[in-house]
Length: 363
Image (cartoon, rainbow, N blue to C red; front, top):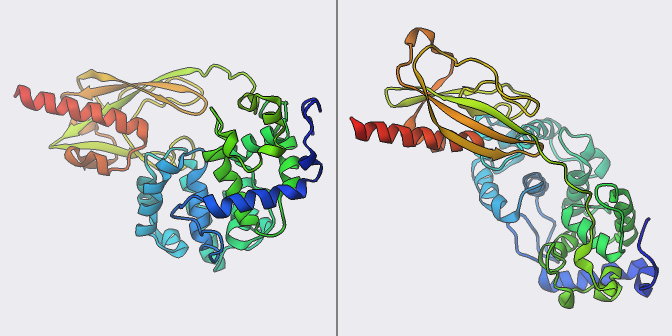
């Protein structure tokens, strides 16, 4: 692996097998209590709950996931229940959590597990399920089944980059970080070790102002010995994201607004949304309004996606022509928050509701 100069060598890292006992001893005393987790010494948690939480936690915070996790379990307490759920219901329940391809993959995986009768209990078997990448398969194998697996999320990347003083910027550093993580991962208590690494990164070895004085691995950490752990992991300069522009159309009739279901694949696939003009990550919107009528602007919302930012103008139709209404479903304006709209359309809908309230006051 590429690491910094050996001006501050760590004798402990010359024997990486001592890292796990230090970390696990700390975890036994300081493990976070999370609804999907079994505490040290308890039986392993239900694989369904581990898998569900790990999918939700990808690129999302624990605070944001907790309520969604509870909601999913209340609606679909077993993987068979989720597998039998209508797509629209699952997508609506996921709305607001972001990265909506995860919800589609969640359904595909649940249906395959239900078909098989159980989750595979090996990392290789889990990788064969639809939508399970290397990280999720390793996490479920370790946490739910006690298999030795190299589990590397953003918290683990940060801990290991600092522990070994890996100077290569991300994302190019990831192979070296994985090799280093492999070197310190024990065969026993693999699930606890993975969760201990996550907890250490989340609560002690934080992005800013790491609490090195509380770290059980302080004596082993090369970045701490160098005196500037916060500098690592290094990151390549971010590229500026393009700004796309589009329009969404608020078509209201008899106290209801027209919603459409987006195509099953692609951005926000399979979700309810307002009709729009075809904007995408690659291009501005270009389509004409979905019906004839008098259109006016209802305001602009801005939303950031992973690879681009969007400026979405909401267009209001004061006199829709019933003969040209597009296909869709009519949703009560007063209950629009229950429609399960993805965040960008939920923002636009709030403008639509505000416009309706303003028009009602003027009457």
